[in-house]
Length: 194
Image (tube, rainbow, N blue to C red):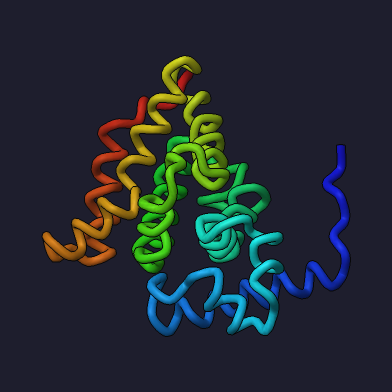
């Protein structure tokens, strides 16, 4: 069933709210992103924000999806090394590397999503999408029954809380984290099936 079409004013309001959330995020991270502050910054009523995003976690999730849309598009239809024509043994490390860069550059946003609300971060739409993409690639390398677990294990290595800890407590740069992840993935991935 196709997704219902949104009214033009609802689409405009949603974009205005996301633009306001982006501006607040750029100014002070997620600290100032509340439903009230975003509504005021967007010039809409608080009810409009709640209708579009349900809660603060939904708003942050939409902001993260906006920031990661380029990655999903490239993985779906783009060129190597992220695109679908790339062999999985090369593509899996490239996707994980892109996720590290994305989360390193947007740590406070992804931390807020991992910590926010009562829902598990493993049940969010973005996690499910990332897991499905990796699981499907890994199923070409590993036993399909093991591919799902391996995808979870690899995604655990790119959680924002781990990346933040490595950057803040251990002083690792984004490049150092990426290099260590690449070595880890190289050891963990099965060889190409013949």
